[in-house]
Figure 1 (cartoon, rainbow, N blue to C red):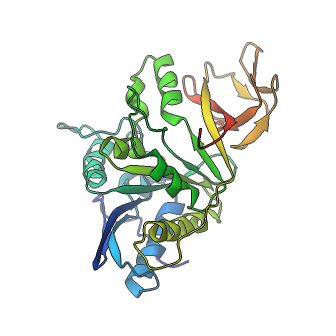
Figure 2: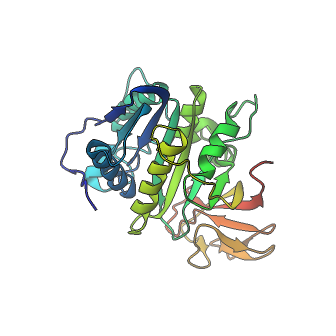
Length: 314
């Protein structure tokens, strides 16, 4: 693997851009929004070297690479510097944290582009997948008008699985904590609010050596699908979709998952997923899937999400 990122770099947000000689869309590719997710910086550094060498030739439009969005968290090897950058993302006139400062820069970058590919990984084991936004709607939570373009983009990035339903479900978790239901707004949600579209690519477990390959392949596919490169457009790889419909919060230190679940593990109605400290069982209410299980969840953290099989065209 080439193109190592220097973890001792300054706290500035480094961007690297390539502009084709013909008109086309503007793509933003981001890594390390969370500092402990290393596959994005690795894959983006490799893509930058390939663009510089000509192995990836940008002939149309523009691509901006941001290998490390959150430099403080990246240097620390932690998910966040002061708070989660991918929550309650907005521009702040009076920033009060590292993530506020970074967020002001990031929001400006999102506004200046048409499409976002935001590269992440996750704690538990599980297959890579792509998070997409809602269907076209004019509702109060996340109005959107580019669902077809976004979902076509997501279908061609390499993973076989797509998930959706994030923001409405997270809003319920926030309300249960007596927080702001809009705190689930992150990079893709902000991008949609600016008139563009974007997806979150979850490449697998944080330390999975194959995650960087998943990320790099998705970058190449994204460039090709958007016609920024003169390569054969990528085929559809997605085979199934899951809608996230529920979230279960940890209530006390004694709440426990009953086993080491993986993201995407199937469950049957009545199957026990976790237990409360008082011994009561938390069970699946339908055929579905455990999503983002957190064995180390603290009180009022999300212990797991629950998803069901859906058609992405529904």
